[in-house]
Image 1 (spheres, rainbow, N blue to C red):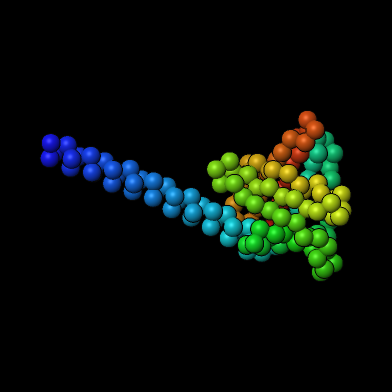
Image 2: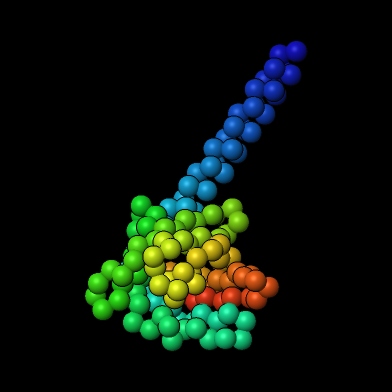
Length: 141
């Protein structure tokens, strides 16, 4: 009986530690994503909607992601619009939402973007919109 109690207690500790380790790993991943996104300004280097190239619409824009989950669209050294962003570390996505008053160009960034590849200085993402594959690439300035 004593051995069963010790074994049960050990198993309980192991499971508890495993959950704590996973929670810590998730927090570290979130911190790293936020650090990568908020450290510097980003530019759009690719934006294709099916076979249509919309990248020229983004020329002159820089994007500053902030830790409060807002993102400034900066053009000609002035903030043109502020949107919202959020990361989902489980589904490996980033969502963006610009207000209705923002330009159509900025609203193209709205939606849930599936991260396909990334590092500290660039991100490749995509989403399906109206049956078309939309590709987005951001590069840190």
